[in-house]
Length: 72
Image (cartoon, rainbow, N blue to C red; front, side, top):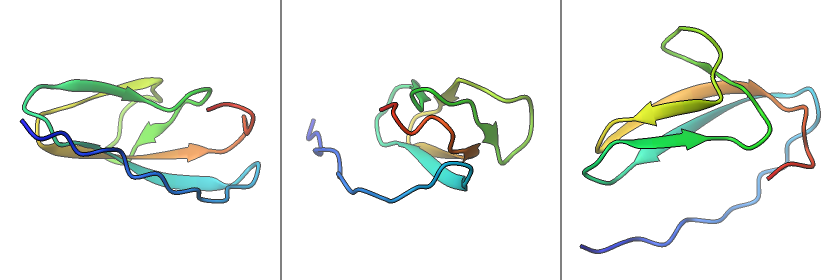
């Protein structure tokens, strides 16, 4: 199985800014994904979360309010 290295890219985010991100799971097993120090709302609806389960070969979009810029 070929494993791709993570794509590292710095995106400037200011405190209080609302950001949409996409968790992408390119593997054949489900995977829990989270954003350190933040909760977020899935764009598909539901309660705010710390961790989302992303199904195999799928993606989930989430919105979060940047407020803990020292995390990560």
